[in-house]
Picture (cartoon, rainbow, N blue to C red):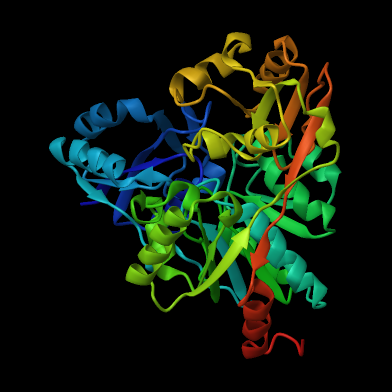
Length: 445
């Protein structure tokens, strides 16, 4: 008898776990996926072009709110939790609900979900969304390229559109962003690689993606992780970023703590804006759970080209969406910059919110002083634009990693906040990466 399986997900790890473990496994029948976290990903079908011959009609994607009903009506044997950035309390609440409904509750680990590459892989992950993984990945990419290495990056998935078209996506130019109809969240991750004349892949089928990347013959593959998930590929060097702004979360969130324990290198970021007490909490947890890891101290200083435009002004602050939503932060780089450079007031964006932006504030009630850069489709991007333009701000402070003005039209002055990783003291990332490359005989660097 086949075991009947339900996979809980958010259009990322769930599809990957299915592809590598369940797709061609005759011992299981995946009845459906459930979806949460991301707008408009439920009530669709994981298409037969991707689900394989065992699933000629594809697999339905249901709202997670129907989880218990599906378990009971479909007599589900196993529920596989396959999404991330979840508190331990949340995970065990879900486990308790599943067990009470009569099914087993399971997690897939790296042994059953990580793909081995023919090329060396450096992975960049984090313990929470918004820890500073992206600027760390940019820093590692810059170091590798400065050594004359050919690097291709692969990004954790964000497939929110046509899944068949998004099976394998390659981004090398701005035209590729438009061709693939990228969301704001996708642009935030891909654009920095394009600026650096570097190629980055993403998509749905990570075995197919890896084959395409290996054919291009890179010296090194960079896994640019996301949503504090652990890598889809077996890492040869694992770099993990921790965030003292949320001290203690490195040992209380899933699967961020898994990343912490598996890491070869741990980067303590944001030290310039963190208290010594919080940094010490993080250090103690690293020492307790992964004492063999090399620890690198780092900062992510903020840069604004015209900071005088902020002083004395009433500001609307726009921040990176996932940092605020999945990551649970109440502020980001834009808020810190507005405070630092003398804003007279940081306005509450909620009275000006329209459409799905209103729904975002209802779902994430901890937000009151910043506007998350939500943009999971043309309609939501337009609603974000209308929210900004309806506000009574004197100036807009943009804390997203991309030039948001290329995507929405802003009817008032704005400034952009940028930030890059800067290591403090020794060892630094260049030291450990050069040593890694020499051990792997990648090139004589």
